Image (cartoon, rainbow, N blue to C red; front, side, top):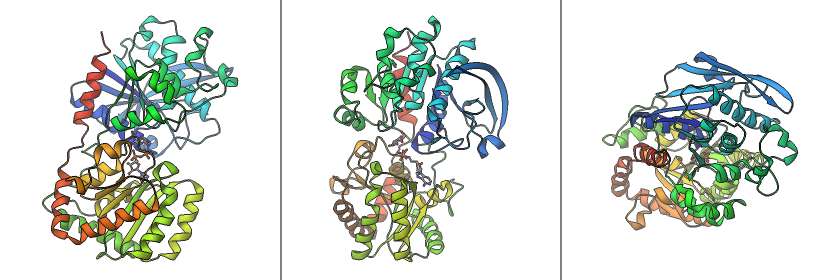
Length: 469
Ligand code: ADP
Ligand code: GLC
């Protein structure tokens, strides 16, 4: 089977969050299953792109808001990522350094989708499946069916994955002219809430819709930032498939980012070396349990509560804390102020640092995820693989991947995103840590849990097969 993934992120080329990790891993595992899986994404002007080697394979033109643009498709020749990556270059639109947050994001997203569909019309052999990820590629199912009168394109089954329903990419109908001509009777397929809603359009037009965990799919039927009614209506074509992790990259035995590699056999000394590095670096005490948070500093992750959680925990318990994240300016500022008050007990790194994140997964004792909403969450699975105990709120993918120690499980779970719940869980963590025999037994146990993509990649393939005649 020939599978084409379309996405704005793909690790290691461009990463903002978990979407990149998924799109950088799923095709690799689908290749392992004997399929041809590739990715089409924008050609940014970041460090990866500057160092990579490319082959130009196609050039074309598109119209966007009465302006004509040329686009080029470049195939990544090296480094070898284990699957083909095609990057679309459009000067003035997709040649940005970063992935998102430009004034012309709407034009950028639409131009990428127009170029992708246009490129497909030039291919001798079409993909068997087009798998679109998140709202940036959500108009592709509509475009394939209704903006080209090519029956071959209309026949390609499309799968749309909702990685996070908070971001739907709404566009005012005033910008309808950005889209190519289509039968205006079909306009309802773009509309949700009186605007063009790419995520809603994908839910309506894609052949199948998936979310990144079964629990999140159930939750979306009740609460989906305005999409719940639509998702209930389209329920029969929706399915939750749990994300996996790339166990080649996230492997403490071989991870090149961490200070000392380790396996289940030497987890205690291995983690200790990584923790020591963190403690030396950030003036923390290695004898104390280390609680960490890594992630986007946004409300969905419960990050707005971090200042209160830290103050409460450091006033009443004897632990160390490390926070690595970036996001809402207000949260960043509050954390920056707090950092000065707890020097020697808490280290807060505002920013994005891939290498440091790996060392923290390796050196931490506990990883906190007090998410209000978590479609899947990858951090808890990375923590498990690196022998760090996840402390999670029971929601979405966290509920599907972490079982509480009180229920014969291996992690710590709480029901609400409140300072009280998190601090209560921290205290449970400390008590568990004090029983070093059980704690170490659990460490070995969690490292053995298999969250690799093997299983879920197969589930996607089964789904694709059900769509191919
Ligand atoms: P989301 O995609 O909602 O941000 P996920 O748990 O799916 O959450 O994935 C987050 C990914 O981004 C993980 O690989 C995590 O390690 C990484 N990450 C998040 N914030 C940072 C940061 N500040 N520095 C480095 N890596 C980060
Ligand atoms: C989104 C979600 C996160 C999920 C990731 C990858 O960013 O917020 O929970 O793990 O996508 O699917």
